[in-house]
Image 1 (cartoon, helix red, strand yellow):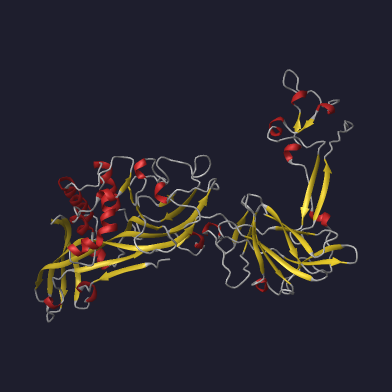
Image 2 (tube, one colour; image 1 turned 60 degrees about the horizontal axis):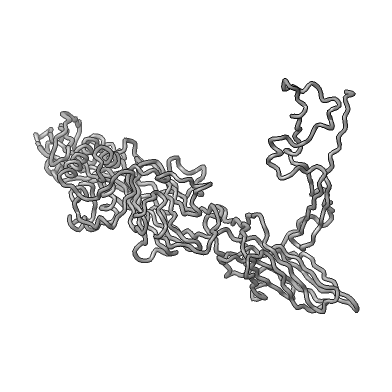
Length: 626
């Protein structure tokens, strides 16, 4: 995360630093004069002085600078706390997957359309410039969820104060936006390109290391390949430079801005100078690390208090790196003294203040996003054997459904998992989810008792995978009878993401003279606390509760109404009353009354199964004695 930037450039000032020598200071004749297209705010100053003091040594005519501003760095939204100051900018980067990819074919990034337009010429574009009125999200307005939504996308959400930190109205961005609206020009778009891509060239032309707004406006005709930039806009766009129109307009912007800068009395109070965000540059690399020239660049005007950038030009199982740079205008002042008069015990002078609007670029955040599903859950496991088995155990493995949130448990210190950032919670836990795919499992086995999962390192029997979409498999493993073995298993999906290991199973093939059986127990590491106290017994019946869903219990009494729509009495009508109201019952496949159901409970530890066969009966009793 970027640090707050404190911008302080305050020149020594005689009326602030030399107050013992200059006293009884008065300001008169406040005025504005137009000089070279900028308004200067002038004030006459009179003051008392020591007769022996040489005024020319104190009040001189050189140009002085006053910049006193702070650019607030954004905070990741998941790190915002109650102590975070109000108004702090925030950001969030994430991958959103609405639906799983139905085909293994996935077009390249630039063959996919940009989220904000349906125009065919938007394909294969690398430099995309948004105009100041593009709604973020979308133009036209596709939904981000439901029918017609993107299958998956990366998003960057930013909140910020367009005015910066100092109180006051928006200035530069407001004028640029108004020009585009009033004259149907693309001044804002051309401004973003010049500042975002060609600022070094403009500074070189002006033989300076500092970029100012006036410098950019004076260089607004700087030539660049206009066809290399694609503009997202709801109106016709033209990035070309029209000196007859734009020079007058840009000069008018500078003239108007100069009317709204500080006067000298405010400078003496060391008032904070304002700053504002003008636009963002989002650089995108089609790789995990930002090496070389970015593959795509997006310019986004900061015309609202938040922006949601949607990027559909991504592929599955690929990492993208984004770098976001903010461009700020800092409204500073330059001033100088003239008409300096020394009358012995008193003196006078005039101060002139003109704006100095500097442009700063700051990388405010960057990070990588990988477009993959959530890592899988550990498999469901059960062990089986034939009565006459001579040393083989059958292990049945199946993808586990549902989802879970847990920290990742490695099998070795060097173990790492491939997880999309959207499945990593702020506390570091990971969201594991079921996904329909072919089964693929890792099987670990030890012949000695393990102390931790790390003891299974270098004890991988193998990775077993189905060639079709079957979600389960059976594995035969050769073991010695009457010897204990210790197993654990992991699911690994087609993207290389790992589940947590299953609990450790202690397995022994018990064999005697004429038959064999398998004994399976859950094994706890010495440092693992037991789930229940050893001295306590917990009845499974107290953990299992079944009840009929509410919609099955609704009375359906529509057949009992008379021609007036009323129900005169329920007496002797019990046989005509059904449960499951008409409206709700239509939402059900079938009513449950009189049907049989099987409920299967499987232990995640041992794989043992209990079946409950349940018949749901409806008993009707009529009693009007009350």
